[in-house]
Image (tube, rainbow, N blue to C red; front, top):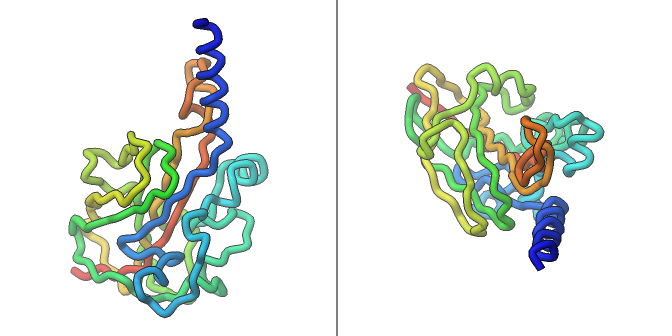
Length: 214
């Protein structure tokens, strides 16, 4: 009986690894979701599926890499400038340097893991940067007590938190980046054991165009 329960648990967790998670950046209003907030922009009806081309494509083709806004690393790039129909260049928020800002993420299918936030002072709505611009500043502090905001629930709803902008960054156009590294795939841990949340995980991302004043 115990062995049967063990098998059920194993197949349950294996099954989880094949379920696609879903989520979208809502505050500040993400490029893909601006139409939901009253902006006259091209609607992306799959705005909760910016998952780097899917798990297999992200990890088997692109070695875990993603486009800056969740498009496949090797393209196409509909959420990036130039040419992306969802990269409107519209500034959705005006912040102050060093401000703790309100952030909301809508989770439509929860899959644990954690969120990361970065920002890039781009100042060019006609040309998006590469990931290096975000990485130079690094991870932003969150109200969760660390730079990785944990998602320790299976709830499907809006989540609200605070994120701190850098003290020394100003821009007419910054790109705010949200990244969700899920924890629903079964994999090999660093110590050689296997568990849910270990190994490569499905990734979701989103971008919003904001201004930061001194």
